[in-house]
Amino acid sequence: MKKNIDQLKKKRETKFEFTEALEDVLIEGAIVPKVDVDYSIELVEGEVIIRGEYTAFIKTSCVRCLEELEVKVSGEFFGDYKESKEYKEYIESLGKEAQVLDDMVEELVDGEVDISSLVRDYIILDMPQFPVCEPECDGLEELTKYRDSGIDSRWQKLLDLKN
Image (cartoon, rainbow, N blue to C red; front, side, top):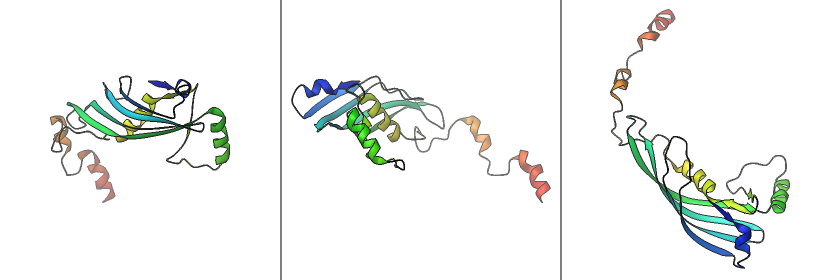
């Protein structure tokens, strides 16, 4: 979902509050049916600052047993955008040896901000890397034969050569 900043500027206000449900958030390997988002857009001298909170229930699979599970992910997000002219000046001011900072500024494209993309990036960062259905999950029965703490028989000949 995109917000047209040019339309907001016509309202002659500087701060806007929104509560919306995003349904077009796509994440590889997971299904995100809906994301509830509360956010504000603040217009400050050619700069657009977006702050908000999100809550999503992500349908994914347990990495151990491959059963489907639902993971709740919630957090805060932040975006800082500049008009094209100010953005170019900002980039030039960084110089050639610029480092990526936490408070990086993005460019407004066609006067719009893509809220879905911004929230999606934060959801990906907040998702558990290896989701499990429960901490004690033993996983698939097929994997139990590989849990032997001994030496894999395929490596035994190599170990015999070494010794």
